[in-house]
Length: 140
Image (tube, rainbow, N blue to C red):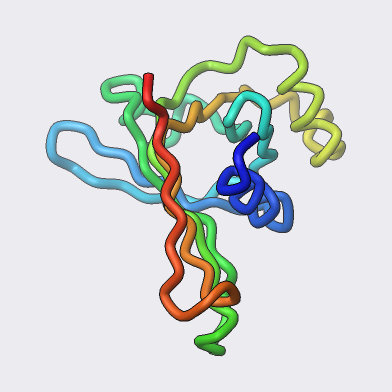
């Protein structure tokens, strides 16, 4: 794993809520989701049901964008990740285990799990210097 991806992974492992943006027929929607992040597969694992606006949008257009952010008013501590990827029905059993390891109480709800396969990250990290940006993009 590159040092840039290590920095991004380190940040994502400290958090557990992402904001997701979806779109269908020109209509935008945003929501917050609990996540587990897998650095090997460069994927978020999230739970959501088919009756939500964001899943209805995703079934029409699986391209998504989102953010994970440290909420702070101290400029020197600002950190956050922007991402883009494809939202897919989760079929990887190891990723399912990861989600339930992070959120064991979710087992009782038997949620539908999804994978956000990442193709772009932009980390802003003012702890590395004001306005420091690290960009990673899948070259495939």
